[in-house]
View 1 (cartoon, rainbow, N blue to C red):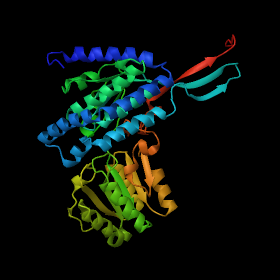
View 2 (view 1 turned 30 degrees about the vertical axis):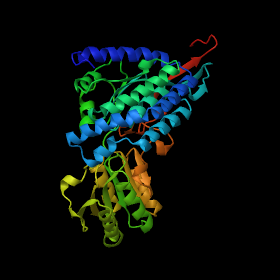
View 3 (view 1 turned 120 degrees about the horizontal axis):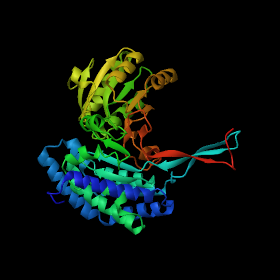
View 4 (view 1 turned 135 degrees about the vertical axis):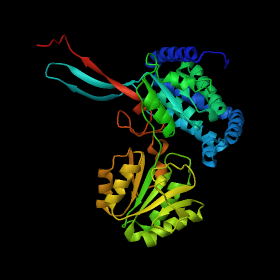
Length: 417
């Protein structure tokens, strides 16, 4: 991009083109949207060498910037991960088109027939950090739901996102849909983010996907409605009625499978009755796997401090605390959690019920790894992120969650008395 281009002018142009594209997408057929997504998937695979080469430049930039190993892992694209992007695009393509779906319908005594029907939101602005696959996921889901999207990826993934975006545009063009339906902000300048947050004339909703700093900025300064996707401070409470083998398997997977994703477990709460037995075994398992365990009440790598509670490590680190009761565990999660994903390990149905009813996280799990907090694992094919707010969308945000609705009311010369 020409460095002399005024950001305000640039973003206004992107916004107006997105709004025009959204008007056309709103009535695009399911077949054309399907064709665009399949075309994009084929282009990603065909251009995988180019995408991986672009990612190499991003990885070099990230290393020079001093990104942690976990953050570099989030950024990395290899052939297997490119295949994952292709699979995600194809999965979204094959999903049922939500637009026009009749959510409910009823007749009134007045003679009116009323339908509530899914409709696109319009133009969605997605602001995200280092993971380049979000470019494909967000673009695909917005398109599936009939929305135009303005993507503003993190500076670390600038080249990777650009290469993936070109494939999405190729899919749109081959399907006869407007290329402006999926636009990528062509600058690392943070002023573009600030500008997007105030584009009330052209942007209908902002979706921030990233850490507390990014989401906090967006929530403070946005004049456009926001779907918040806050950090994942995921807890696991190991109850005294937990199954030993299930607990060992789940805890190790929840922390170590991929430490840099929002579904990675960051805090382990262990009932005092099993602390010296299963609790210490879990800590030992984690340490043996290379995890730094910051423990209170058990023998970990180092003692835990107050700062460790409520921390999203996104690394091979975890905080561990012994609690006296399930009530104390829930109280701790309410205070330090981020309403993302929390898990209870127990064979006691009453304890599970207490956990499920007393907590209001977007996702609550029993005897399952928090790493399942992912739209693909929920059958959505892909997701823009895990919404932690309470309005409109919660949990994995897929195509269906990126729609609103309108009422279609039919009469037969019907008048109101």
